[in-house]
Image: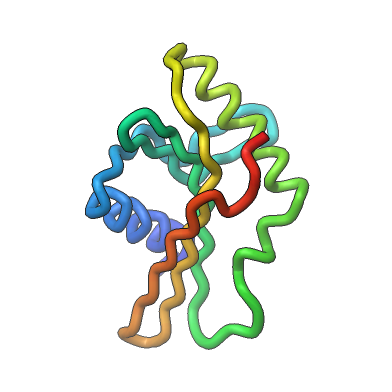
Length: 115
């Protein structure tokens, strides 16, 4: 099992169960790659998914550094310009921890500033 794609699939299922509509997966623009773009009501969220197996020291959220955040912001700004609708924009993260058969999914809304 390839952990990254598996985690993104788990994140999509979680988001859909929470009432989000998945608009795009692995959206690319220049140096940006957004794992998942979702919509709920008038809010578009760029979602960065971090999946880890086993026990952790520290949070995978820390691996989303300032450079990655800037690339995500450039990507989601471009996406919003393409859809040409007035929407709110949010940057989320989903952290998935798989320890054997136990799976923990943590959806962090507004994980870092969008602008």
